Length: 185
Image (cartoon, rainbow, N blue to C red):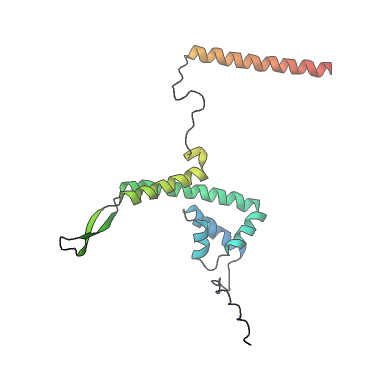
């Protein structure tokens, strides 16, 4: 009777450096990488002395200051990405388009054209803009018109003054009314 097959061992995980940076030295390196526009996981994988992602996220959960600093670093990284988007838009990227064709005898051949990779550049730019919109929505998010249905609202300065006076009068009336309620109570 044959014995059951032994379970296969899981593939060994990539080893981190045996001498990892301590937390106080690792955090500035990580934040500098993120502020330079790199993705957090890329920063952590590039340097074997940095902690694993799970260790970093444990630090992140336990440290409010780290959370704030990571958010600021990401906002700085967004600025890097927006600069990159401009550079990508201004710089042609030559690439080859290979089309497999048949000649009149039925033999296959490759037709190669070299041209600007507009679709690829557009994808790179849109990806950076979408990321900027997610990380800094107030600055890069879509501008929503919730009041005028797209029409320009015209107001004369006298109309603005009358409207503001009305608002301030309402505020004063409420304040006076609140004072009466307190005295009566």
